[in-house]
Image (cartoon, rainbow, N blue to C red; front, side):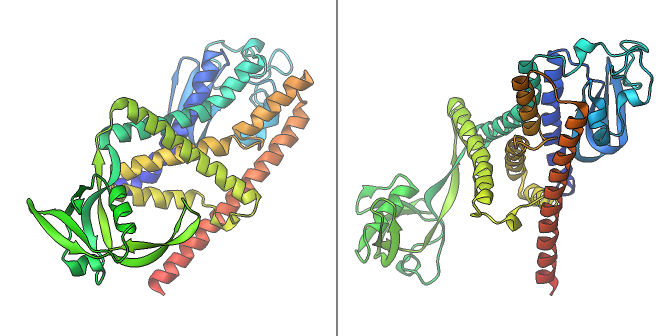
Length: 389
């Protein structure tokens, strides 16, 4: 059952945290926020607390925080109509939300509570709060995973032996733990690989633990070639055909925090690197994935257990943070650029100019959505044909 609702859990949580960031920041600086919605479409749940109406909608593929703005006409096409287009107000240009005017009665929303009335630093704080919360979610989840699950590592215990390779022929078995080679202790997988790689066609004496008993087995690594990053050359190395078991070790909280931050940064950097690859044509646009791919990954992760699902949540949250910083109008990054330009200009853009900018941004996002959905459907069709063809 968890596998089938996993996409909703992943989408819902990541979007909720993002919008919660905007909402809390807006509240903190005193912007009037009549509506906080998770999802789009028909409302499944709606409740008013104070001046805000909280909504959970049918389609958990996004969300929004409705903030009072003097430029509601500019965003009317995005949110289904301007607030002051449905109710006459006392002063022209002062917006009103007929469904959320309880705190003030039938009066225009005070100008000092408009988004635009706030200083530049406050507007930037609101715009950056969503991506900040997504980075925070990824960081908290990955840190929690290190605390709970520990740090994964490759052990010196053999998970399996490749059939026909020298390790299996010499008598090594699945479950053997290699503790020493030629009398020198082997502490970890890296040490084991280094020792074997340095001895192509050289007889080695392995001390292994099998069923609690220590045994000695003579193994002569086969010669192979591999590129050495240290020397920049292809070198002759030893191989025995052993596949290590993966273990985990406890991580102190301070180290878990550091590891969580490092992992979060790597997740975010991988997205930035992919975007750079698109710009330089190192990455093909056909490799991009959208909601269908995310849903499939969510189902697969849920079937793999809580650890995989948590990792996916952190990964998508970090991805969303980076993508939202793209300088495309209607995304946070685009709104930040607009706010900065208005700050430099010393005045706000006209409603008409803002509307044109937002329409261009919406068209860009819809084109990107169409592209990734096309890629998803193409991969899905190919997968079905390969499976049943």
